[in-house]
Length: 208
Length: 109
Image (tube, rainbow over all chains, first blue to last red; front, side, top):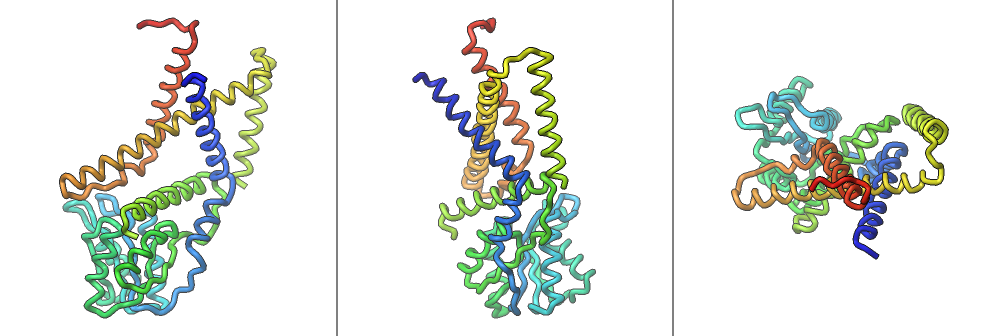
């Protein structure tokens, strides 16, 4: 068989897999179900601290949607009295407001006392966040944390924080309502694929 | 509801396109299967370009981090524009392969 024919067959198989994955992603609740499964059945319990992982902030200082979701979940947990400290993470572009500072300002507007908020503005990767939160909370004797992020990210973040010495309970920030819109489902699939690749990289690098 | 509407509408326009092709343009129905196969090959080529582009961008970021010691975000790989760029690359490459394999296509080499 010539190489062109074999190449065509390989391309066709990849194309078929891509089309099937696209249709399943857009027209079935697979991504939502997977997200739910990865997030488990969260029952947040009283802990020493609530740790809200960084998401994204624009150079002008506007929090990204996922960053806001995580922040609001963290605020909700604090307002339920589940921990005395709210740790907000996230760096920023040079000279621009950091994500952690903008989040802290919003948390104060929601009535969280300033002395209950800790910020960490230097961590740029999830691994870095675990190390810096360890340094931040160690002196306070914090052992148990409620870790807030999207379910796909928690699969990678939770082992990192456990490795840093915390007893971790993951709290997904994903919206609890299933979307019927194909575009939302595609976005959710994209997040899951990205987090799966991140998890694989961390595994291969020996971080988790 | 939205998903059902979109799937139903795409189904209807596909049936409409089949009738236009078969009746108005006189295209043989028997060649539809081969056409779908060609479409899948093109999609496959686009996905190959996408995988290569994303892998290369992440590798470049990781190597640059290692060499310079400064933080570079891997989020450049997390951009929907890669799909558009890969679409252009993949379709052009498939067309090139197709024209090279078809002796009736004029060559301007």
